[in-house]
Image 1 (cartoon, rainbow, N blue to C red):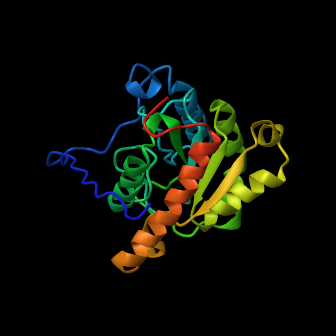
Image 2 (cartoon, rainbow, N blue to C red):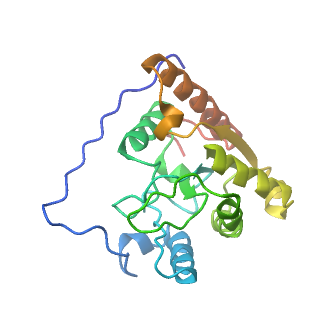
Length: 224
């Protein structure tokens, strides 16, 4: 891998005065059979802490086809589109470019947040140890819903801490799947502040982690 793909994401801006994304309803794409179990889990987490926001997982992903979990440290605000994201639009574009270059189809991976809850309109900021620990049970439940996932790429310090906590639980799903954790740089914020050359190096390093996870899962670029 010598260079990262240049990918431009063009999204239509919301109309003036438009409100942010409303919670998904049962007949929406967020509750289609291929993604419903995960988003029902999201609804459960919302009910645990009323007044907090828990983003849904985009229906481009699939519980049956998922092989790689992308775990974010989610220190930023929640996405205004109401879905789990890499932290901001620039970070999301970086990840999309990496996927494009590797031929990593969206249904093969699924994003999740270290601490699923957000205070509406506020950034989480650096997560406390208690917030990271609170994400362990939701993560284990999430992993049970994606039974073919065999790798976690943990982006950022908090995500890596949670992933290491998971490994220490000695949960049977870890050894049954041969679950492997890859430590990766966060895709947004100060963690990605650097020259263009340095950013390219970081993306290449991330690409190696995702490529190894794909190889372990028997995935070839763009092919089932």
